Image 1 (cartoon, rainbow, N blue to C red):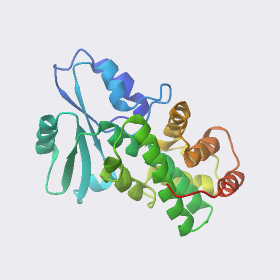
Image 2 (image 1 turned 180 degrees about the horizontal axis):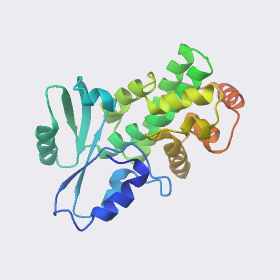
Image 3 (image 1 turned 180 degrees about the vertical axis):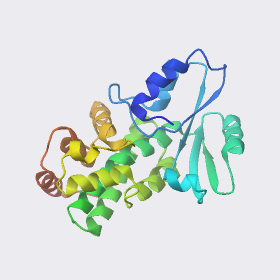
Length: 253
């Protein structure tokens, strides 16, 4: 699996070398920052003959490698292809659940990284467990609105690739995005928080990509906008939190 911001380059190099109708399983969780496109949209432009599927869900790679029990979503437009992929990839400890909603599976995997950064900031600022639970819940509402606007289904976003991945990523220091948020909340600048990392915190680029596409669709995503402002416009964390808390009271939904 390659980071989301490199998928276009890699697929461009593979285009013309892949057999026709080859299933292409995309594992990157993110949105392209230059275009705001999902990974399947990039695949449709670069590998016309491929049949993309999305593998996503609550997965810390180290636990998968140690063969600890893991369940994921495998979304494929063609159920026959999906069943074949599950037969090839599934084991007693790695359990893919079949879906057909490629958009929903990708939205959940991309936006939860941004919410995880926000939850890490809450942890680093010692704002409490209540605040983190609220951020996760309101973050899920933003994910649902964004997914619906792009054509994703609510049941997908309430499943493994949405709520499941959100729950994992927002509550554990194993999460690269949560750990990055913690460092920011403790007062470290972004450059220092990213220095020396051999892995990628996809939420950094996804924050900007998501809010750009959300604005294009007129979708209200205040948590994602706040994370984007902190990451990319040097917004003060305490002032940003205060602005979120000062938003008008509204009905839940």
